[in-house]
Image (cartoon, rainbow, N blue to C red; front, side, top):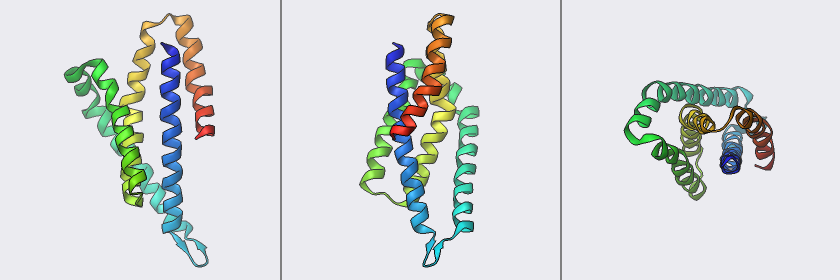
Length: 151
């Protein structure tokens, strides 16, 4: 059971890392000038991205998470993020424009923070405290870092 949680967390993290790399690569390409990268324009763009992710995460946490869980239940709610991840990844790699990747990554990161991560925390509720604290820390810390390195 927890091996599956580790596997899914790793796949999500690798995919997000690749998409994040694509976002940064496209943004550097867009804000490059003949003399180099326009640091102020790139900083403004990435700051706007961070603000978008944080605002959307907040809105999803406040207005969507509880309604999603009540309306569709735990199991169906767990499928929202993987389905969206597959759809957005395929869409992004078929036509990788900066604004498509911006919106896609913003939506995925926001959903990860506000819906997927809280649901993943609920998965640990059915385990013993010993298993929960031992495996959870390994999955969240070490598994996540390895996945980012692979991605």
